[in-house]
Length: 156
Image 1 (cartoon, one colour):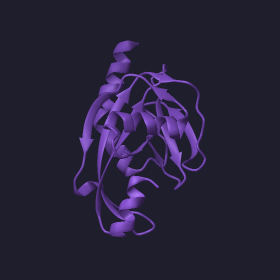
Image 2: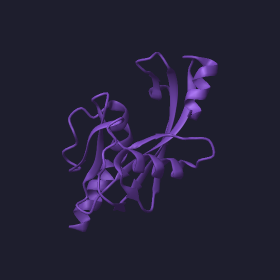
Image 3: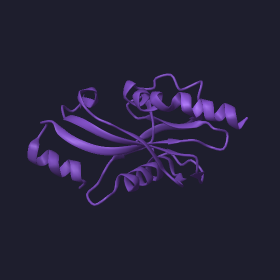
């Protein structure tokens, strides 16, 4: 049983503060990796921290579990929290998310989709993000999108 499940047995649906990580993973074509989650929305690979993990370890584990890919160097872009990151999920659980957003340009391996968490995994052009990208994930990407695109233009 994972950490959050154990907490939920104790507190029920009451709000929790949950910490996690997501990764903006760019391939060699400077395309960004997205995951179509089983709830239908598109998002970034990532998830919740387990006991004893660092945020970086969480990012690496979640990318591997959800996509089959490994990532190299991670650069912390920011941490997102507050009222805008309150969620009530379908089963009634409430949470406030604290999410570390990382960037990597080192993506290793080939995509293997974990069908329990994803319908699809794809890389998208920075100027053509997937339809159905959730507001939560869009908020993680938007502050950095211009920098990523500007860097892409300078590299050309």
